[in-house]
Image 1 (cartoon, rainbow, N blue to C red):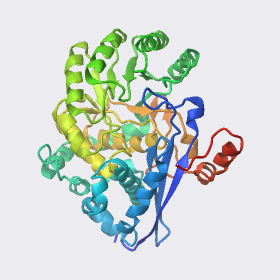
Image 2 (tube, rainbow, N blue to C red):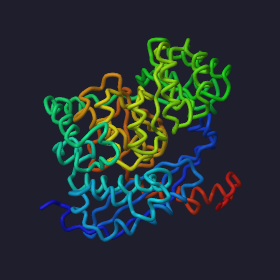
Image 3 (cartoon, rainbow, N blue to C red):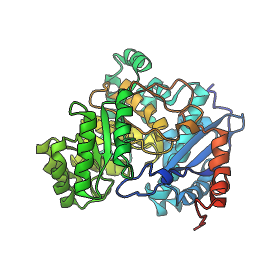
Length: 449
C-alpha cells in the first residue's frame, strides 16, 4: 500500500507573494523594465497532515489574477485521493487542463496554465515528500512506463509516442547509478544572469563579473535590446571582464521584429555570443526559424522557451529547427508532467535543454528537472547549463545552492518549493509586513487595480 493511499486532499490554498526587486533594477530587461519578482504560492493539504507546496512565477501586477485562476480550479483537486492522482497522473493532468468551461479561457496557455503549473508543482512536491525523496530522485527512480504514464501525449504523437518515450528512457538505464553518484559528488553546471540586468551600471557589472569569476563561473548572460550602441559597449565591457575563453550569452526578451533581430545580432557577432535568447515574439515560431537560419553561419544559436505556452508550441519550435537551445520554465507550462514531454521531444530531435531560471523559485525547481534529464534521459551534461540568479533563495527552507559554479544536488524531500513562514508574513501582498511598511513610507503606492 502506498503512502498516499489513505490521504484525501482537503484544501488547496493560495497566496499572492511579491518582492520589491524593481527598487534595485534586479531582473530588469528590455521588455520588463521594472519587475517585482512575485509568485502565486500554493499549499495542498491532506487529511493525514502531509502537504505539498508549489508556485508559479510572475512580475508583480497580475499575480492576483493568477491566484483567482487557482481558486477557480480548487474544486477539481479538493476531495481527491492522492494515490488516485499519482497513479493516474496523466489522466488527472488532462482533467485539470480540460474542464469544459475553464478550458475556454486557455486552452492550455496564459493565466489558466500558470495556475495549473502552481497546482501541479505542489502535487509533485507532495508526492516526493511522501516518498521521502527530492523530486529529481523520485523521477529518476520511476520505471519508464510509470514516468511516461504521467504525461498527456495528446497533440504531440506526430513527434513522439508513448512507446518511443519509454524506449528513450530504457536506453539510458546503463550507467544510471554512476550518473547519480556524479551528481551527488559534483553537481550540475550553472551560468549566471546576475551580472547582466539592463538597469545595472557599468561599475556594478564589472564588480559582479569579478565576483562570479571568483566563484568559478565560466558562462555569463547579458540583457540587450534597448540601444545598439549601448549593447556594444556593455558586451565589450563584459568581454574585457570575463575574457574570450568564457561563454557569453545575450537575451533580448522579445523586443525586436524578426529582421531587426537578425541585423542587431549581426552587429554584436564580434563578441561571439553562444546564443541570442528570445529575439522576437515568443509565439513566432517561423520568425525564430528565420533568425536561426540567418545566424547559423555566425555560429550563434537561438534560445527560447521561457514564454512558450505549451508542449504543442515547443513541438513546433523543435520541428522547425527554430531553437538550438530549448529553455523549459518550471512554471510557464503545466508543471512537471508537461515539461517531461518537452524534454522527450527535445531528446528525440537532438536539441539541448538549458532551463530558464530567472525568477522566484525557478532555480529551486529547474535544478530537479535538469538533474533528472542527466540521470535518466540525455545522460550527459555536455553543452548544457542551468541559469542561476542570486535572488530570493534566502526565502526558501531548502534553497538552491551553487558551489564552484555548479548546482548542488538537492537531498531534502520535495521540490525545494517550501517558503519560510517569515517570507509569507513579510511579502504577502498587500498586507504583508514589508508591504505595509513600504506603503506607509511612500516607497510604493498601493493600487488594487
